[in-house]
Length: 128
Image 1: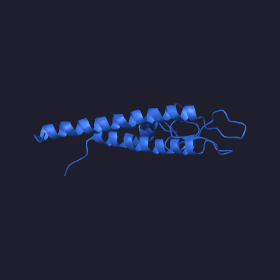
Image 2 (image 1 turned 30 degrees about the horizontal axis):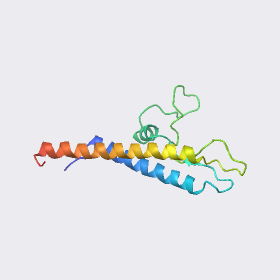
Image 3 (image 1 turned 135 degrees about the horizontal axis):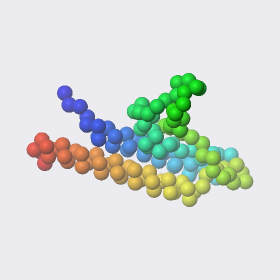
Image 4 (image 1 turned 45 degrees about the vertical axis):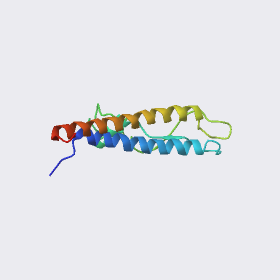
């Protein structure tokens, strides 16, 4: 009967993406002293959402021109190619803390958009 508005779907997707990315960041921090551990991360939300949405051109044959390969497997965790310590660990706690702050900002944005959208829907129904 009721269809979920697109803005709520996007806000929900952003929140889920932030939660998944935060989990990987926490895993990276937990393994900061593990020899040979490689830091992992998920691509930014825009690339991930574009991939899930199917927007943009995709390459179906090697001969196709103009297709964007950068979003390929954007939602899959990717190993970071950052500088490694002598024990083979690539986790930088400073970088992980910066990423954590970015993820928190994304999650707060998603919650704010979701909350304000619900307020608008309630106001339009006269149920403030």
